[in-house]
Length: 272
Image 1 (cartoon, rainbow, N blue to C red):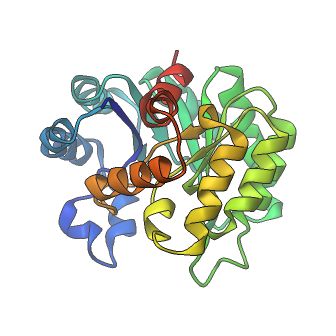
Image 2: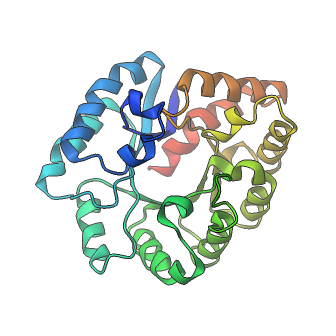
C-alpha cells in the first residue's frame, strides 16, 4: 500500500520518548534537520512511506541558503513532499521570513495553540499569515489536539473556526482531527468543504475507547476524500498508527478505494 504520512517530525528518537522532546523539536537547526532526515529515511522507506509532510517546529528557523541542505535531503527522501513550518506569527518581519521559507519549498504553515499560546488577541496576526499562505496557494494546518493543563486556556478549535470563516478556499487541515473533540471538528468540516481531518496521534491514542467509534462516524459523515493519514512520527510508532487506522477503516467497511484515498491519494492531490 502506498502511504503519505501527513505528520512527520524530525526530533531524535531518544528525545521523542522523554519530556524534553517538544523543546528539542522547537529548536532544531538546519544541519540537525538534515542529519535527522538521513537517519529516518531508511525507516520511512521500510514502512512503505513514499511521501510525507515534514513539520518544522522551530519558529526561529532561518530559510537562507543554509536551509538548502534540508530541502535537497527532503526531496531525495520523500516523494511527494510537503514541508510545513510553525512560524513566529508575532514577529514584525514574519511576512519577509515567510517569503524566504516559501522560496525554499515550504508550502504550508502550522498554528499550534498550546505551544504558541494563541489567544483571541493573536487572531489578526494569525489571519495575516494565513492570508499570505492562501495567496500563494499553500496549505494552512491547525493543531487541534485536546489535552494538557492548557486545554481550557488555548482553544484550538475556536482558532480553527475563526480561520475557516476568513479562509474559505485554501485547504485547512485540522491536525489530530480534534482529538476528544472529534465531533466538533467534524461539524466544522461539514460546514466548510475546504477543511480536512488528519488522523495522527488521536486515532491511535483513543484505540479501544468509545471515541474510536466517533472517529469512524466522523470519517464516514465527511467522506473519505476529506481524511488524511498521519502518524505523528516519532512520537507515535508509525507501524502502530497505520495498523490502528486500517483496522478501524476495515471494521467500519470503508472500501479499498476509500482506504487508498485516506492513506495516500488525498494528500497527493492537495499538492498538485
